[in-house]
Image 1: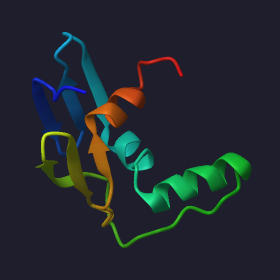
Image 2 (image 1 turned 180 degrees about the vertical axis):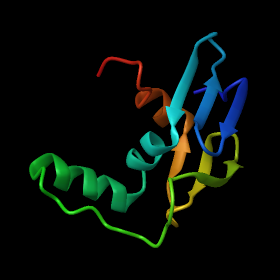
Image 3 (image 1 turned 90 degrees about the vertical axis):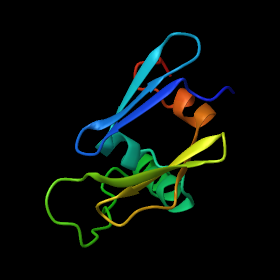
Image 4 (image 1 turned 120 degrees about the horizontal axis):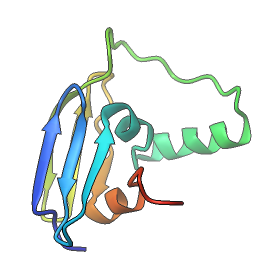
Amino acid sequence: MDAPLHIDLKKDRGLTVQWADGSTSFYSISYLRRMSPSADAKTLREEMKNNPLTVLPVRGAQGPLTALSAELVGNYAIKIQFSDGHATGLYSWQYLRDIDPRQPG
């Protein structure tokens, strides 16, 4: 998967990615956090799929969820630190394509 042409993170809104094929994807901060590729987030999504009454973990964040920072990881991913303390998910370019909210799936 080719790296995006342009990445724009608005810490209070979301991530906009311009792809080499001319398409653009937008991921809200809450969507990115919910879809984190980290092991703990994957486990939580599975639990929620099997039991809609799953209790969500609460961390020490106050106020709305935001992105605190982001860094490129090599030429294949971006790592985002969220205001709730979560910072372990690496969003590869392929993973971002796979979870694009506009894509049927």
